[in-house]
Image 1 (cartoon, rainbow, N blue to C red):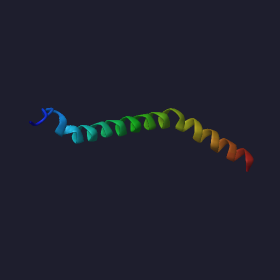
Image 2 (cartoon, helix red, strand yellow; image 1 turned 60 degrees about the horizontal axis):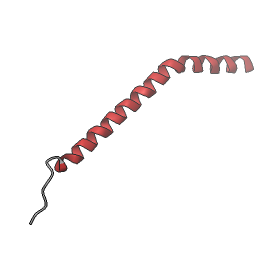
Image 3 (cartoon, helix red, strand yellow; image 1 turned 30 degrees about the vertical axis):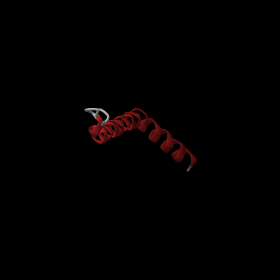
Length: 54
């Protein structure tokens, strides 16, 4: 006698790919947000330090 087969068992690979895609998208959004918020302040601070030390 065969064991019952689950309906969603064959589509795990596609679901995993979608989950990884969502994670990559969210990580990209976090990186873009951090660069947008802190990028200009970091660059300004670094160039000020470099200009005053020269």
